[in-house]
Image (cartoon, rainbow, N blue to C red; front, side):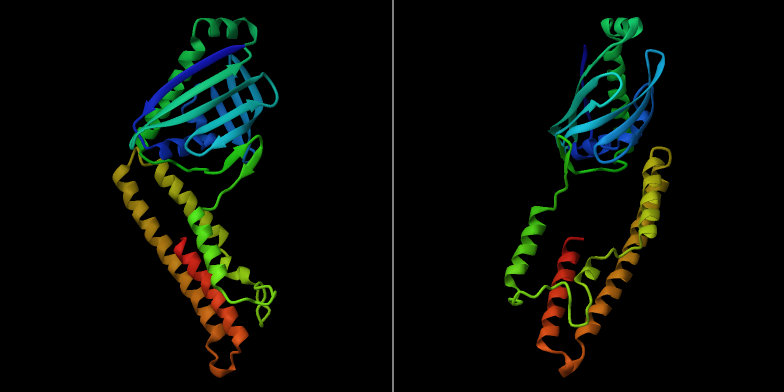
Length: 281
């Protein structure tokens, strides 16, 4: 088995550095010999790379991932390799990355390369290109903040938001065991949680935002202007969506004396859901 350990300091905040590293499909932009990395799901990656003059393909799995601290992996087929990357904040705008890898060197070319330190230099070069990528761009191209522990994927909701929901639930009147999912009109409570943007519109905005980030290095001033325009467009669309949702809510209780106490209770429940959603946006 061969081992490689390298580290580098990046002049960027910890979260920015970590977030950029989670964009695995962008690894070919700074990793020498890597042709492509395709993310199959939250924990599985398919790699295509040239190693020792030979084109190889293999699948790897993320075994451990903790935001802003550590990412670990291992190959699940092909030549054995495993490793981890850790992230350490040195200052508000400075982060150390430490890479540790263990792999099976096959053939005379790979074994000689490992013996003379070629692999160490290759990883060192990868880290230097990653550092340059992050520092020149200044912002990450995306992020994934979930946790992984031995293949178990965990997604977290902010504790403050969860506590706010719990407090609201305790403050609401007892419903006598009746589910709040259906009101007197038979309408589900999930409509307040429905996306305010159509999936196609949201995806279009995401792609345009990613384009802005990718072009920032070459056209920084123009891209900041486009970012401002995108944020303004998104705010206008969200405002229209919120206003439409509020209008639907008000129509359910503005019936004067015709609205029963139960209908008003349901209306208050829906307003609470909508209010918490606005607070967490």
